[in-house]
Every structure is written in structure tokens, then in C-alpha cells.
Image 1: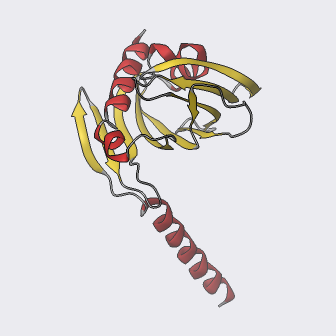
Image 2: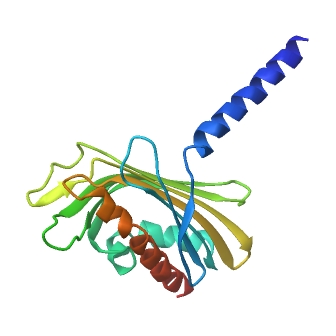
Length: 204
């Protein structure tokens, strides 16, 4: 009887966790082109929409990790990235990096410090990559607006030996005075352009 009660409690707990994790999004397809799907979702306690990208492209786990670890070349594929560089390396799969994003006048560029971790399943079934903003590591810079908070999540699998399927979720509070309606209007452009260039880069 005690075992049955514990099992029921565990199942209820898992159900509650699943609801809290997946119930916070209501994804709506915003753009679909060149095999890249971009979704947007309103989220609680924010006026800025979350973004999800789903796409399958040529590549492998190793190739994707190599691209992500080459931080100084983010400008080659990350939309409007002006500069990026590693601040502190914890291990080959964990590091802190600084990134600055260009925004057209009269808006100010945004910058952020991100803490990135890569988790590769021991059986090579999936690759999980998470990056969250870190405050206080680098002083705020004149003429730039520090992003108050951001979160990036990649869940990557390999449908075949030469292709990867990416499920990518991005959330951020851009800070400053960017109107939410304006940011949301163009929210799908950056992710689409980034993943289009990433696909080209992974083919090389």
C-alpha cells in the first residue's frame, strides 16, 4: 500500500511539473521558410514574446558544438551580432561570454554576459545547450544597454547520421525603452536569419 501511495504521488508530481514547464507557452507559427519554422508565444509577466525555432539541417553534434564554441565568430551567423568573446572558460562544455547586438538608431546597442553549458547524452541520443544571462560579471558600458535577463535553450537530436533536428527557445527582456509591440513585430526575423546562416555554416 505504501509503495502504491508513493507511486501515485510521484506520477502526480511529474504531471504538475510537466504542466508548469509546457503550459507556459502557447506557440503560434510566425514564419516558415527554407525548412525553418519560427513560433512566437506570449509569456506570463512579460510584454515581450518568447521565440521557438524548429528545423532540421545537415550537421552533427560535434560540428554544432565546434560552431558554438567559436564565440568570436558569432558575428558570422548570429543576427546583428557586433562582437562576442569568451570571458571565462570553466571547461570545454561550459563558459561565460560577452555579446553585443547592433540596433539601428535611435536605439542603443544591447549587450549581455551569458553563461553557457553543453550537456551531451552519454548514449549520444541528444544534445542539450542552455545559456542564461549573468549580471555583475562585467560593468555596464557607456552607450550600451545591458540586457536585464535572457534565456536560451537548445534541444538537439540526430534523425540521421548526417542531420540534426534543433528545438530552440529564446526569451529575453531587452531593457531600455524598446516598445514591446515593435520588438514583437520583428521578433521572428533575427532567429530566422541566424538559423539560415547556421545551416550554411554547418555544411562547410
